[in-house]
Structures are given as C-alpha cells and as structure tokens.
Amino acid sequence: MLMSINLEKVNNYITSFARLIDERRANLVTENFKVGVDLGTANIIISVVDEQGNPVAGATYPASVVKDGLVVDYVGAVQIVKQLKEQVEEMIGVRLTHAATAVPPGTIGGNMKAIANVVEACEMEVTNVIDEPTAAASVLGITDGAVVDVGGGTTGISIIKKGKVIFTADEPTGGTHMSLVVAGHYRISLTEAEQLKKERTKQNEIFPVIKPVVEKMAAIVNRHVQDYDVEKIYVVGGASCFDDFEKVFFKEIGIETIKPAHPLLITPLGIALNSWR
Image (cartoon, rainbow, N blue to C red; front, side, top):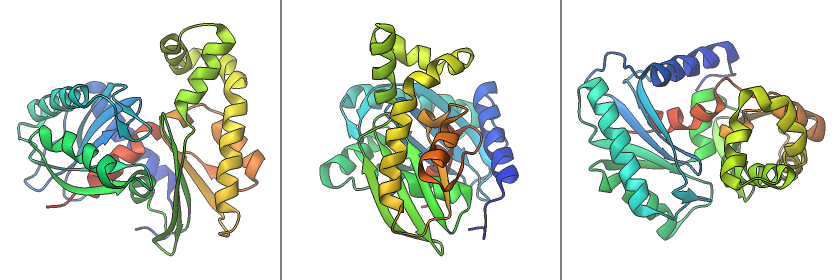
C-alpha cells in the first residue's frame, strides 16, 4: 500500500476503468489476470485487472437480486453474472475461471456462502471473499483512515491503522433509503425514484430531499469513528455519487472527507485486486 493517498493518481486509475466500461472495450490481457465479482444491491459488476493491477475490462448491470448483503434472487443473480462474464470473455478473448467476491462487513456463515455460490455457479472458482470497505481501501492505497462504502442497502465502515483493518461495521442504511424518501416526496414508485435519483441533471433538486438521510449516515459513521482518532474519511459506493455528499459528512462529523472519482467502481476494482490463485 501507498503511505498516503494520491487522489489524482487514484482518480486517473478509476477513470481509466470507467472508460473501458463505457466504451465496452478491453486492454490487452496477460496470462496472469485477476477477476472480481461485486454483487451489489443496485448493481452487479465484473472487473478484470492485470498482474500489476491495471484495469483490463469491466461490465456492469443494474440489478436488485441482492438486498442488504443477502442473495434474495439466486437464479436471477446467476443469470446476470453469467451474462456479464460472457461479455467480458468476448472482449478479452480469454475465459474467466477464477474470481474474488465481497460481502458487507460482519457477513458470516450461510450468507457469505450464498454470495460465493453465485460466483461458482457461473463456473468460476472463488479465490477470496473480502469485506467491501477493505476492498475499497486497497484501491485508495491508504494506511490510515476510515473507508465508508455507501451501497444500496447497507453502509460498510472499515477503520485502518498502519495498514491494518482494526474495526469494521455494517449499518442498514444506503441508497435504497434515499430512494424511499424520494418516492415519498414526489409520490412516485420506488422504481421511478431510483431512476430519478440517478439523473445527473436533477441533482440540485434531489439532494435537498435526501440530505436528511445523508446526515443520518454521517451521524452513524461518527459514532463508529469517534473513538479511533481518525484523521480522514474516504467515501465510496454508488449512493455517494451526489456532488455534495462528502460536504455533508465533513459538516456533520468534522473530519476531512474525501470522495474519489466514480465512487461506484472503487470497491469492484478492489475486489479484483484482492483475487489470487
């Protein structure tokens, strides 16, 4: 890991991966590549990096087959992962046979196994199951600080000291809760609220509506970090994509809060980085 985060370098790294996904293309792949499968509440993402960790290819699909870290539609999850796997294999010209995956902090037993089972049902051997904020930390290259992964159903928190994770927590709040507030405010369906929330042109209108949810998230994070002398907080995850998200965290917690580019893609890349054979 790097001694401190180089935000420009991280942003360039993530942006290069985002561009591969947007343009549906791949970089040249070597024999020793690594694969990550991120089964999120709102999105499923497959990421591929080379031996040095450089992005090779990726594919994403909006989905609701996982809720709060639990697989609620096993068949649907397998179908989507198989579809994404085929897309990536076609782009890179190589079969994907091994992959890492991730779970919210504190996931144990059958719930963790169910996530792994989805990957294995797609003919990929699971090489590692890592917790989501720790995966994100490996992309950011931090040795000290708190990583907050704001997902669709839950918010994961990892506190890192001297390169080691010393605390993890998972809280039942995330993008879905924002969507519920949006749905109630505009009197629309949850599906319509999800779409409205993602419209970049509506950010200035939507954010004041969901700001109380973000403030509550910040209060929860503050409760976890206040005893650990945290100097910086790094927010990732699709639900943190609002421009002013990190500003609310800083105002509520009083700790410098950093959000890298394309926060949705941080954890998926970190999962791939932590795959090994």
